Image: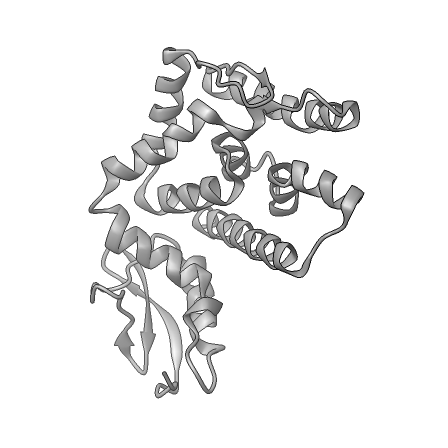
Length: 232
C-alpha cells in the first residue's frame, strides 16, 4: 500500500492522545479510533507513520501494532489473555534447569536464580525449580499471585506483557522487563541463554540467526512500549 497522506502528528483527544494523518484520525484495523494513554506513545507512533515512504509496511511499525492490538483485541478478550499470559508461570522457562553440562547449569543459576528470587519477593510468589524436562507442580497460591499481577494491568500494558512473555517464553522475565529490572538486551539474553550456550559451542545457521533477531526486535519493541506508556 502506497503512502497517500502528507502530514502526521499526535493530537490530544477526549480521554488521551491520538494520531492524525492529514487531519484525519488514525484508526485500528477494526476501524476504531486509535486513542492512547500517553502523549509520548502517540508521538512515537506518529513517527512510525511519518517514516513510511513510499510504501506503508506494517512490519516496521511495532508500536502501532501493539496499540491496535490493545484496542481491538485485548479490550474484548481480556479474561482469555490474562489467563493465557499468567499460565506461563506454571511452566516458566527459568524454572527448568539443565542437569548437565555443569557450565550451562552454572550459567542458568547465575542469570535465572536472581530473577526468581526477585519475583518471589516482588509478588510474594515463589516458584520451584527442577532439573531436566520433568514437570514441577507450582504452588496454587503462587500461581494465583502471578495471575493477580497480570490481571492488574491496563489493556495497553497487558498487551505488551503478553507479547514479551511469548517472545521470552517466561512470565518472570517479561515481568522483570515491565518493572525495569531488566532492559531489552538483558531480557533477550536471559530468554535465549540455552540457545546462546549451544551457539557458542556449535555455531549458528542463518535460519536460527533470523529467528533470534526477530525475537530480539519483538522484545525491544515491548520494552519501548512499556517505557513510552510510563513517561507522561
